Amino acid sequence: MPAQLSALALAALLVLPVAVTAADSNLVVSDAYVRLMPPGTTTSLAFMSISNRSGSDRRLLQAASPVARTVELHTHIDDHGVMRMRQVAAIDIPAGGRAELRSGGYHVMLIGLRQPLQEGERVPLTLRFDDGSTQKLEVPVRRPQPALAAEPPAAPGKH
Amino acid sequence: MRTNRFLIALIALLAAALLYLAAFWEPLPQRPVEKIVPHGQLPPGTAPAGGDFVLQGPQGRVALADYRGKVVLIYFGYTWCPDVCPTSLSLLAQAIADLEPAERERVQAIFISVDPERDTPARLKEYAPFFHPALIGLSGSREQIAAVATAYGSSYQKQPANAEGNYAVDHSSATYVVDPQGRLAGSLPHAASPAQIVAFVRQQLAAANTR
Image: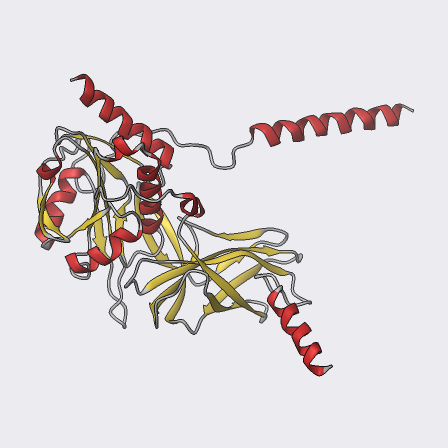
């Protein structure tokens, strides 16, 4: 019976969605993924959407992950076509609104990957907010563009 | 009764608005293909001239002139770049994949590193094929890279390194299009869609056919 119970618990764990939200948290993380990078690349990043269902503004202050030596919050400034990547102290999540971490804007940057990330692997990522709450996520590693999944194989023997 | 009618009218109006939004709302409007946008390094009003260059590729020397007869797509970036470059190269790769095989034979995509200190030809050989097997990465001396970037209107600036020695490189994110005669035909802005890239490439191929 205990074996059955633990099997059940394991099954329940496996079907848990990516966005594991603490029961008392009004911050909901969705669509989180870490970008699969080319072989030999020591950097990557995490994108996600963070909804704030509370009545007060929140800020994402810090992210941490055991897969990288350094984890920073970054944004991009599009300066007349020149993309300037800069570290930020925090990412605002307005009350009743959301913060979008996506290409060309905010991201969680993973610097100094300890080992290559594999497609489909789940990366532990802990987010810390200005209300003192933290969220532990298991973020899947995905290819840069979902559309690429549909890419037909290259013409054989032509290159 | 009046209130009911008003409510029904309001519901009808909102439903119509919702249908309209569902049918026509585009969260990310397609940006039109822009003409060449001069970046920082060129004096205002000077259009970049493009032109031939020789750099180091996966198998040694690579010259732009090697690709006469092909449309060449050039993107300047660096492999440490976590977002802008992989995003742009993925869009470029998708565009190449979307071409007909006969068109693909007449197109070459090139990634030129603006970070030659870290991006050796060997590093680029490991990096570029991830996006598309036909994408090649080129490196060179700092002076060579600077000359090519300036000629094409691309600009970049290495940022100060942190305590761990890591640094970012600010860089323009256009894709430059060279026609089959080796002339700079124009550029596509950052995050141009595969459809926009394909359309520009086909324009160049069609123009070459009628010459």
